[in-house]
Image 1: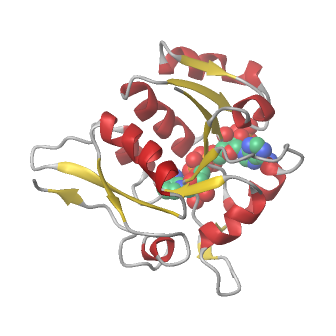
Image 2: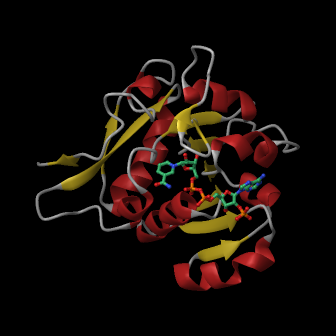
Length: 198
Ligand SMILES: NC(=O)c1ccc[n+]([C@@H]2O[C@H](COP(=O)([O-])OP(=O)(O)OC[C@H]3O[C@@H](n4cnc5c(N)ncnc54)[C@H](OP(=O)(O)O)[C@@H]3O)[C@@H](O)[C@H]2O)c1
């Protein structure tokens, strides 16, 4: 599979690293264009490439990792997502002090889902610090845990499968409205770094 990654910062790079570890390809994009990603693509290694946001968004699975305040502009003007799988790794926090954004009572992934109409949204990869997400998920005491939520089982299986192949323990916690709330940052009970001992 080739996974599009929109956002080439800390989390976008961490996701790209794990997708490559799992044996898939990556097309990564930022706000400034593929020519600014030459060094990053070289560092990521075989299987990595850069593209425009539109090109990354056209892959069957697309991860989005952009600061909350820039999400709307990053995702505007793209064609309908037509059932493609979109990973929401974002947390609804605002600069400069990372206070929680006002979501009007909705979960952050429900708000995110409205920005990607027609997509099958899967929330994951939002609970680990970027350097932890980028590192080896297999520790001396067990595997690092990634929670997965979404309204479409097949989409959750595909996304969970990629992170499992990379070595994570993935745990399905339900749909976006209920499960998503359990692992959204800040404040949710599962928004923390956990290791599964199994
Ligand atoms: N950092 C963490 O440890 C952590 C952990 C869990 C979840 N998260 C969440 O992950 C998301 C990304 O965080 P990050 O730390 O990776 O951010 P970051 O390092 O600041 O990277 C942000 C990326 O988003 C791109 N971007 C910004 N505005 C854009 C736009 N209008 N169109 C297209 N791309 C745009 C930037 O591209 P340019 O460089 O070209 O501007 C950059 O590649 C956030 O929602 C954050 O809450 C972060």
